[in-house]
Image (cartoon, rainbow, N blue to C red; front, side, top):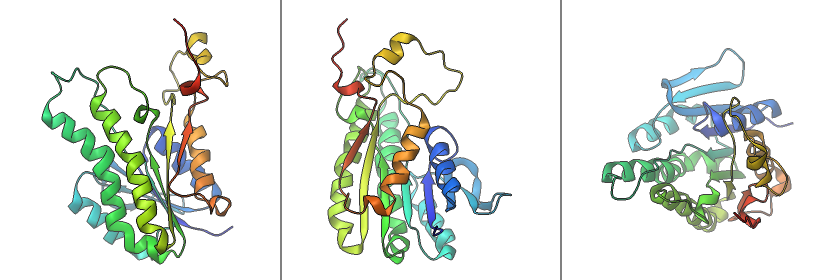
Length: 239
């Protein structure tokens, strides 16, 4: 098993933490970037795991991150997972709140690829996985900022795949459906029955897909969106 360098944004909790754990279990060198970590690069007590505190919205901080991890020589896998959502009626949503969601969810992945591109190229064959959402294709009220940002990620993914393919870099995205990240959440039978597989998703469902898309077995897959939602978006639900 070859040890790769893997970067996961928003890696402190939820889906990001599950992705970090999955790559660490594989034996990869994993760097979890999250704005809630202390600033700078820090090694965990366990070998092969680093944290870095930075905000993906900020070009200067992302550039500093790329410089700091340059000591590893290359990045083989970049998982752009950091994201936020603000649910408000449009007339109550401030321009600053709109910008915050779009800057985190959409500009963040652009900055991460832009500033780490030399390290991705140095890997020879690298992979970028962007975390979008089924909200890119279906919506509930008052989710304009989140839905727009996730739709942008899907489009960004195939644009990057076209641009970076000649560099040996594959770019794909995953659109999770209902992934319950709160282990104490009280889910009902009705919640589970909205899914064709009979259950709500868990973070490991997305982490396993990241492992696959970053593997040689997925070497013919690029520019693709993988919907992982237990069949929820194709199930007709009658009230």
